[in-house]
Image 1 (cartoon, rainbow over the protein chains, first blue to last red):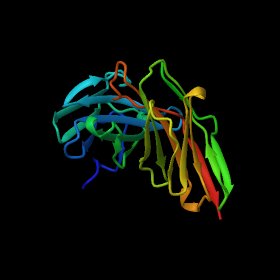
Image 2 (cartoon, one colour):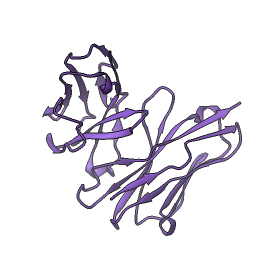
Image 3 (cartoon, chains in turn red, green):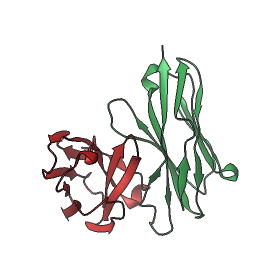
Image 4 (spheres, helix red, strand yellow):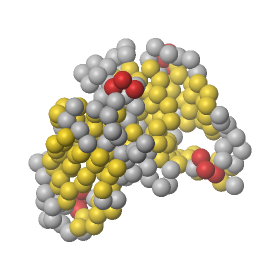
Length: 114
Length: 117
């Protein structure tokens, strides 16, 4: 079975540009999570969806960040405009309630904002 | 509020040594899950184990073992006869039933394990 798929794996952009990160969860999973990992702040949950509905976006740093899940097999995290302090690794994870709530993580997208 | 503390920032051992990674958690919920994840140098996060709050049995999987003690709010992870491939950052995490229905994982800051030959 394919795991969580994220694209791109690496993204280098300039300050002020729009960045879109993509995620395809494991087929059949009904929860999807976006995390950010930095040296300073560790692993932070940004937002999570359950059955495509955003449940908790309290971790989204500011209005420049937005996330969507138009269907069960696709989600995006958008940063507009991007800033150097957004540089981090962004992980997407998915889980299925009936399988013990463990979250399976994608390989991450390493974002560098110059 | 839920919190996970991994006091050991970095541990260095020589191959074949046993090593224990500590995890202490805080929660007011009586129903919760505890997890361990491994993040090797390649960067992905790999699920290792899940434990629910009603199951205090220790678990062994090959060279890995986990000791869950509710009395001390600890969920420690031991690697026996460590190998170079065990070098990674290990994260302990907690999810509660209340409010989030186990959906939100709160991670500790991680322990970097370096196993040298």
